[in-house]
Length: 359
Image 1 (spheres, rainbow, N blue to C red):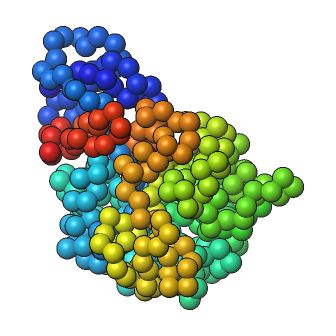
Image 2: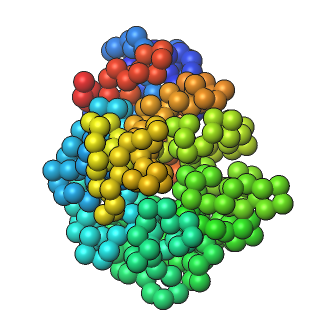
Image 3: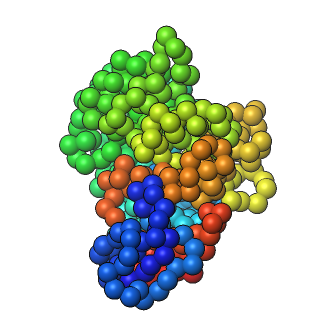
């Protein structure tokens, strides 16, 4: 099947074409298609979206069992996300083992958008833990549970300043697991040491880490200037001010990525929900605990992508790269025959998964 139309690819929007054979993406390019297309796309065609951090959505937490994951899968696909990482918030051993097995089943299922697990913790700083339960936090030097290296794990977020963290980063990278630095009080030197050890991401820049200061640039400053590092941001206008989002865009360029850090309150009816054993609700444009503490977002990734164009000077093509091709590359996911068709305002019109249109 050869599709032609306006194609957003590698941050550039121009006439182009995509060739799909079965469930395989054969070739893409800007310019004239190599032969008459089977279909001309009326809107904008782009690689489908990829979310590296989904704690829940639609009233469900990713730890809620197969029914919850079914609902989250359907919601992600409806919003143009054909690959996402269910994220476990410093889980206990029993929860980690159970949920990682459930995630592994979905990774093997070509109809599911689950691409692996993101373990956010337990090796994080107590001072920057956010809603992570303090009693579940660990130090790598004291021992690493076997489930950290479960085959379903694709990303691990940890704090590089913890004793044993640099050795763990190198160990995870040797296993092909991407490492993000986050929920950390690391200074610039500790952050650079983490990057030197193999970390290639930060978990939501500026959030759950010290602020950027001109005499203490910290993890955020180190990530923004290190060309090896992908820099995901939560673009809801609450977690990071729009002016700072533009700073991220200008400093990181094509390394700037979009991530939702979505909670069960994302795309859900008004009300209270549970996440990591804590009560949360949508309030003030984000998810918060009853005392007002930020506890993640209410974003879907397509809305984050539209926010990126509204809150910064990013073009639609740049925003699609930050929400699609970039996150896939950061997580080590190969390109697939997953596409999304949008209108000129960035609203999802159709989604292709594995070479077949879903809607």
